[in-house]
Image 1 (cartoon, rainbow, N blue to C red):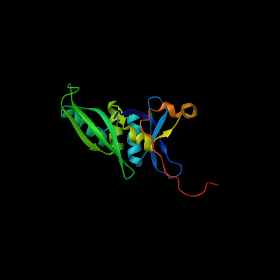
Image 2: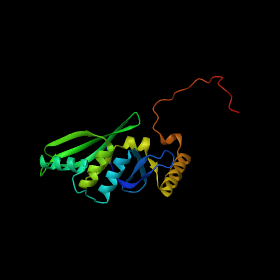
Image 3: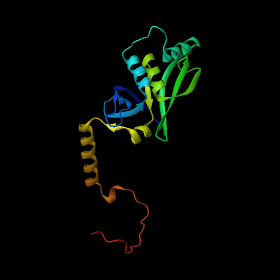
Image 4: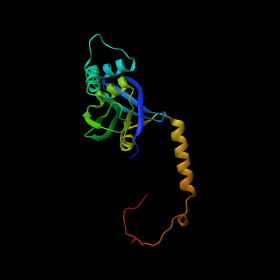
Length: 179
């Protein structure tokens, strides 16, 4: 399963629900993944994007400091699944100085994981089945090209293009008429 790296494309308010939303975009800027979060989480991510630090450590700064004091760094954040319309995220930690050594995985809320990744400059990786299920297109030119290529393929394909080893005869029934 090849993960897709995503970056924060926008932080805003969903005009229909009034809820905060983080829009992750792929590197090629073809797909976007909306993640609805609470207002405090959106504010924390916004502050991380703008590199604003509070006079005293925020909760995310406390977490980042704790990870670092324990000798780890955030290697990446992984959005690995969707369960009941909720994204499942993990913080992937690696012992400082050991790129592939001592790895620790910690279950996290996506908003917290994204805030920490943003603060640390770590990549946010998303599983392909999440993108297939929940992402939206942001590049109509690419969509039109893919649609055109698919139509050309369908129009050009012949039965002889397939290496059929067995012929299967299907019985005809008196199913519903197609009017």
